[in-house]
Length: 206
Length: 206
Length: 206
Image: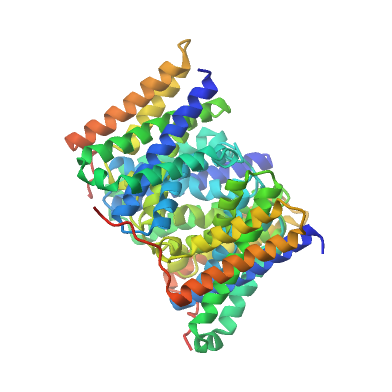
């Protein structure tokens, strides 16, 4: 698989997961069928759109290539079709789906920024924004404080995955290895911290 | 009238209507005179700005050409000047203004995306985003769930108008015909569904 | 100091002030340490990012040059380190910091738009958006109506500063003079109006 192909597959899988996850949030919020699809689309494509605009890759990949929108809508459709099955599944499944989307996007976002010559620190931040952007737009639409601010170790996990990926790209090893290591770091950190209830320290008032 | 001119007039008329409509929402929310103008500006220009950034037409038309901002502010000024008249008008008028802005933007947005080579599916979505974008930004500013998610058959109407327009552009007929058909489809669908109280099916919980 | 250097220093100082101010808002909102840094980053860089995208200067300066992000994070770090000191300071200090950031950004934003050939009216609006953009994103993240709509004479001060700057650029005088005059106009108007409780007229309902 060529590097471009690998990146595309990772990106598309993240889009599908986030479309599914955004639609489930919309269904839980009792939106109509169109609102569910709007939220699936915004959650799935939002992070990548913001990233591409910020790194100057416009029109963004998700606008140039209709397969991204289709992946987001397929995720939304699957959520609608399987909502009865999903409701009986443990909460770990939706956390896992979300963590998978987060990991795939953090990695693909960091690599894309790196590939157009963005400095390492900013490439890491672009990966983080790609990961948390879609969910942030979803939460803004639902008029609630974004998960990135509410949930402990969410953006931190995306940051960790993007950092591992960018550090790994520096050496001689295949790109797929760095991406897999970054995705694993993000996914594990997110899932374990959700399970263990790990919290970051609050800033105490004086 | 040249195609460029037609598109400009349609776009500017939509900007005026949405500026008027955004200002009325701000007046209803008891904002000060400057807040009313900010909301008129954001509602009028928001959708087109997002669309132009996403299709790579930057700086966006509404930044390059001051007449867009002026149209938005004129809409806001008219709303302030005529607020007494407006308050005595039936609710159908504000629905009609909003539907007119939605229809003009859905059509002009789809055509602009199509003209820079965006694929049909994405051009339809860009038209929809142009139509609903300004109102969505207005609602985010007012800290409420966007109309696009709350109101039945709102984004659907924009989607229908953009679809009719893009399908029509494929043939030999004049561009104005496709645009008029698309705008009529969006406007009628929105106005009739608002009047009839049409709803999309909610996704039932299991 | 070259004009480019002057603009960079002004921009970076605004970034530091807004990072500090965004972090203080996050600390007051009881966010965790990462949430404080996210809000410092968004408040500090948001306005400039939106401006650069809208004037077509992409990738934005704050993505190309990591020193902007570092300035925002330093502002956030200072806020965390000095939170006990800050809490004992009068409210005038946080108003002053915010007004300083607003003034620096309104001026640098207007000049940057002017330098890439944006028309005067739109350059003034771009300066205003640069000034109020970061705080608006901060408020959207905290799920509250943006200060730009709530606080009297906030966006008006940014507008005044940008207008003075753009009018001043037309003549023969050194650029630094116009920028200093614009920043002073914005800062003074904001601080004095906050102290005096000046209000803009509300639009009365009929």
